Image (cartoon, rainbow, N blue to C red; front, side, top):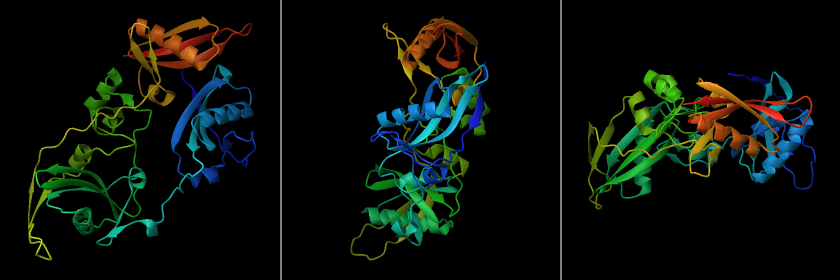
Length: 347
């Protein structure tokens, strides 16, 4: 498999005016202060740093961003002009990178994190309770009481479901200095690929690299994974529903309850669809680096856009029996406009 070396770009230049409407490049210091709403990748023949900065600005414009920060570029060892550039995008009203605790609600001395903050942090425990909670405040109080007993600094209620007159709630607990969560980003290994099945068979951290229904997502926690990790069972709180009483008498026991199957969490990838309805997805560099190709093919021709290259690569990959493909390298002819495209194939 052809490999690309990774070069980290340290941006030291200040914002520069590309045009009255073009997305602006941020310095590293500026980017650290803001929350990105999306990450994108562009590929092309860029002869200077300014070329790919301008190209990224145009791409960011199309995504509705007003600014961007280039994080890394991949450079082909056989063609220094071919680069794959990664960047984070920011809206005009991008929130600060860290929320202020004074803006957070507090219950039983424990802060309630919003999803935007909680999803980026690794929980140290999970609380799952079932009981009668007539309103959201009572539910938050019950969760916060459990969180406080476990020494949590903050909690995040991830799911709630009605079970008759009761409500089952799952919440994640965080320390004040909680580490960044190891999210499964767009480089997740497809779960229906050979590499994905092998990683799932290994289990543990290897399995967490695999995209599979309801398992690990940058936009959702997985209750089963964390419940198993922390050996957590559902605590059932049998509360009195007598509204005349100012405090509920409780008796607590633990039991297992039926879990609702999670919806599939799939990474969106560029998809090539042929006229006969057959489809195939393109892997990015980071995902392909975790997998082993069963074959590499190449083709030559004159193609103007990335979409043309991807379509031709995908079409040939489907005919070769692949489930996924990755454009490993694009070589430009020394004489003439043609290019040779090298494509790795995956089952």
